[in-house]
Image (cartoon, rainbow, N blue to C red):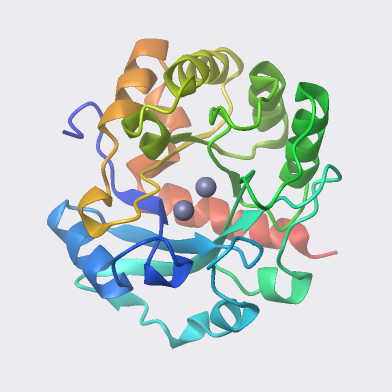
Length: 245
Ligand SMILES: [Zn+2]
Ligand SMILES: [Zn+2]
């Protein structure tokens, strides 16, 4: 499936800890290993989502092994934007310890708003020094100015996701939004991250639909972070260095 480019990394996956996902980290890692992935992010939903883990979960991620089934594991979060000011639902002292911080807009967690308000919240969260990557801007629930998001990604060097799960679920408008977004990413040249957003182990490392859009929009391989473990780890290291005052 992932023949278009070599994919080694999936940073966006959920476990039973999310409350509405159904596999353990061990099952996800085994699935990742079978798909030939070398790096897996465990990024359960931030605490403001109903059923999501508490802060204790995020404070105890050092309990995870560094490697499972031959796959390197990063303990992280998919944090929620909770306000139009772009605030996140995890306090700084927790964010500071996470190995990967994904950020996105979710129903039940974000109050909603106009395109302008949603975009402003999203861009503010993108400028948070603790944010590593932004996820699923093409989701139809909260409409964003996708051109501004792609432009900001290139300017700030923050990767933005093309989310395979939104396309797989064929949510109304997701294909159209993601297709437009992919074209803007190709135009402005910002870093792209592909995410499976797996809520079951079978889906870990599944990028077929996202890769279809990458190819169609002619996003360059150098733009896509998932093509190499070192690209991802170098970026995350640099990002942490940038935080120090
Ligand atoms: Zn979820
Ligand atoms: Zn999400």
